[in-house]
Image 1 (tube, one colour):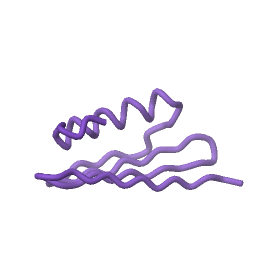
Image 2 (tube, one colour; image 1 turned 120 degrees about the vertical axis):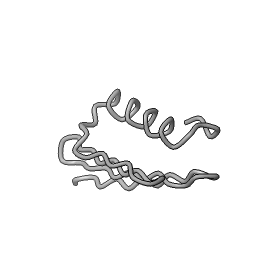
Image 3 (cartoon, helix red, strand yellow; image 1 turned 90 degrees about the vertical axis):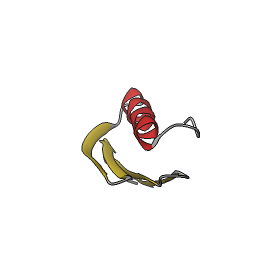
Image 4 (cartoon, helix red, strand yellow; image 1 turned 180 degrees about the horizontal axis):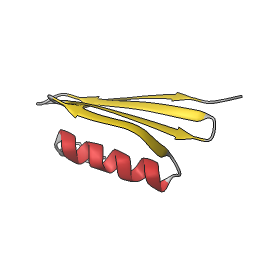
Length: 66
């Protein structure tokens, strides 16, 4: 991910990488400098949040079925 990119650039890059790796988008939200992306892959799920204006932060949470 390009750390110099805008929030929209980072979200586009995350979407591209997730889908290229077989994750299916179940929800995308981008409001007022915050984005939340949710994906599934089989029984696994992932939630990614990206926020910030001057400095972007991304958090990934992945739930893996056992």
